[in-house]
Length: 217
Image (tube, rainbow, N blue to C red; front, side, top):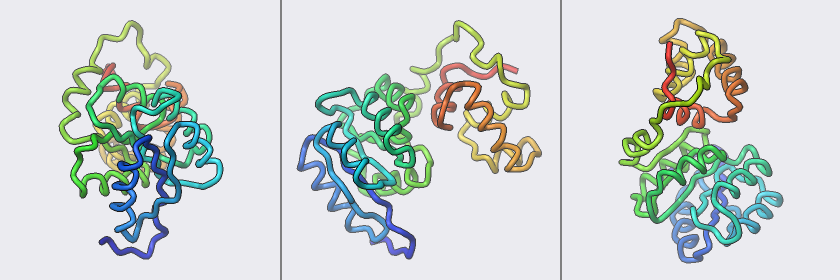
């Protein structure tokens, strides 16, 4: 069991199979830095739960009754922007990964994940860091790499292009600042600006965009 004096991570479980929710709940509640504050068996229930109870992380099944996962993620992000979302699914679906990430999810895990990896993913996503199931990176990058019909980055300055290129390599603001000899605050400003110009809301979306459409000089 992990011990910490920090405020526990508040978790919402969204799965139409009660046995799955029970298993994840038992695992999370064995950790002193996690607490399951709500459960939902459908997308509608999940949205209602978010309106009642602040959550830090939502663990969401890919196949939910009533709406697609991408639709649910988008509505959850609109309802509770501070709640970060992990997709939890029985099978790998690269296109679904693209769809839910574009909708705002920052984690994607298969249900055969090891116990320690699930816990690590929850903690990472709670802090705003993306998490992708081990072994999926190569196939996702292969799916995303297509020739763009137009230059998506035409509105970006040369410096913003440099920042985006490094962001696409998974670098943090601190690492980008060191690589470009900038302050971390300056990099944060560039990241905010390029996300706005690209009509994106999250770093993960930008990283996936770069994987699909590499940034030219």
